[in-house]
Length: 160
Image (cartoon, rainbow, N blue to C red; front, side, top):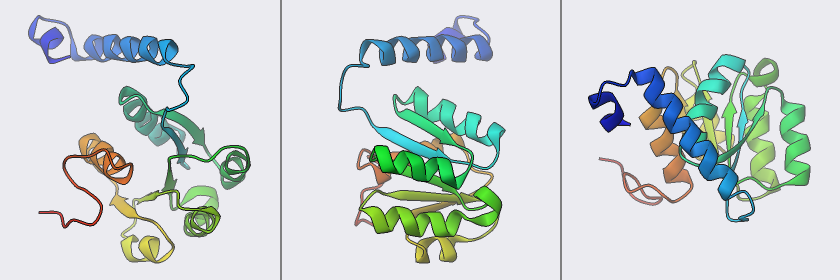
């Protein structure tokens, strides 16, 4: 993408080209069963689109759930690799959702909120917490860390 911008392509057009390439890649690899499936439980449709864009850019399959019931229905049919939970989803039911995801298995949970709720989130079973606003690179790095794919942080090691 950087090369495209350096050659005079606008950043918006470069992102669209990247998105098209990622979509083509996803279609070509749709039959593979090793894809990473992430549930994005978000209360705000615009924030969901923002997060989903960056997750899909990394090649992850996403389900956007704008309420707790949609998350629960999805958990009943498919085990995700990660659940990202906005703590204010469905009127503030995010903490209970974190507990329920953890009760069902070992799926990692990333809690996000505009409120400083880190302690409550971690006490409810979240494996990590990000407070909004956050930079996309921090979001993706945290996701990769929770999936065990980050060189920045590894489970069981301290961040510098």
